[in-house]
Image: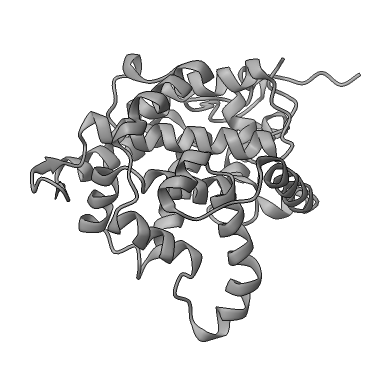
Length: 293
């Protein structure tokens, strides 16, 4: 029987496995194609924090550069997951440097506040981690409860990169759930959140891409919205199918996307997985069932 080697035993010129490494849950989870649905769910959820979404509105041009923003986020996640430690640290330093220069105005009080306030960084982080876990789990990715807890704990490392104290970041699913319980009274679907909702439902595209938007994007955006927690649907004021129906749709979509061979999917930009395998050797290829119990 073939022995699966860890990153430490793979022959390579540069054996730096980065912040997580091939034996982490993160290494396996972030290779799944349902991460795109999860990322859109995260945008819907993040927009429900009035200060967080106001910071986006005042400091970015997401309406005209939506694809660029999505690709920059994907590149950051890919670099911090599959890049070397040095590449991950540099990516984090760039994010911290940019955020340090930005501020926004509270939509209710008029107060000026820093974009890198820990409260906002923590919200964005937890909304992402919760979305990745929710979508991957419900779409059929092999996650035990123990592996899900490991995933949450592993991402104290990514939280540190954006400027958070890891000791203040949830390290398990129960801690993540407790965080959302504590922050829910501060959430609302104001004008900014509704602008994000409108944009995600029908993003502007060149005329030639309108059919693709109607056939593909609409399905993905509707699915991402549908798998939000019920309180988010209430805040947005738009209903969603019953949770069981949504889970079946997630599983069907996940099964369809996973039929595309990984080697084909990994060719898409920004190709972080292919570079990591080239650096660490074939044993570093992501495999959903690899990261232990």
